[in-house]
Amino acid sequence: MMSLRTFGGDLSGAALRGELRLAEPLARHTSWRVGGPAARLYRPADRDDLIRFLRALDEDEPLFWLGLGSNLLVSDAGFAGTVIQTRGCLTTLELIAPDRLRAEAGVACAQAARLAGRHGLVGIEFLAGIPGTIGGALAMNAGAWGGETWPRVALVRTLDRHGQVRERLPEAFEIGYRQVSMPPGEWFLEAELVLEPGNAAAAQATVRALLERRAATQPTGLPSCGSVFRNPPGDHAARLIEAAGLKGRRIGGAQVSPKHANFIINTGDASAGDISRLIRLVQTEVERCCGVQLIPEVHRVGVFADET
Image (cartoon, rainbow, N blue to C red; front, side, top):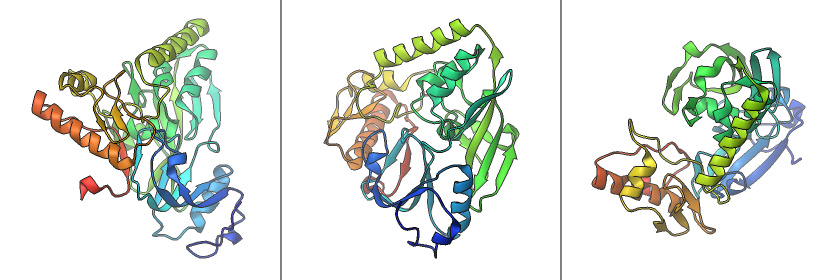
């Protein structure tokens, strides 16, 4: 572990047990495999360690939370602040009642779906198709194949930058299609999900079928972020992109997937700038061809040249 005497005063006295990396390339931690360095990346040892770390930070330190790095485009310039990586630390996943699952923010969505299936619980099979964590699914109301995250949420616990844990009901949030508005300065720590009893074998078969369908229809073996654009009402972004003749279109190392048009893949040497420009091109061409403004699902971090 690197020295914690690096910024915002002396963190070495905070009895921290996690790992701090300086100038850490975020391309190592995003599913697109692009992104410049974070000034600092902290991987907590566990929840208590994370709380101590937050309490030791300066009030004005920029913060960003990172799970599996999907649905995320980090600029080539990186992030001039601290990234908190939940992957590998906030991983508690347990059945706390016959119909209720508790999952911390760093739990992979597919892992939660598989555990529910093994216990004969249904309602979150769709999470098997989400290439992210529970924290990310909560933040964007992730969904697939007709299912969404928040209809299954009984309550959440959030954490603010002062290390204060709060318990909140769904009514505290504005929830929409692929978007969730939450109190400023708070991040999702965990959720309790309400499920329904079902047949364990059938539930596990559904999860396997959804994973097989994902592999058959999406470019799962190549770096991507998942779906790039929200589906417009009554239509599909992939259909519109294909109708605009954009399947296979490239800018630099970024390409609209020939397999699924709502995916942009890194063919090997893409920059974040290449991907950003290709997203803009797709939006422009679809609006010109089809009269529809596509809205990205992708969360951008940092400064991009095509936005200035």
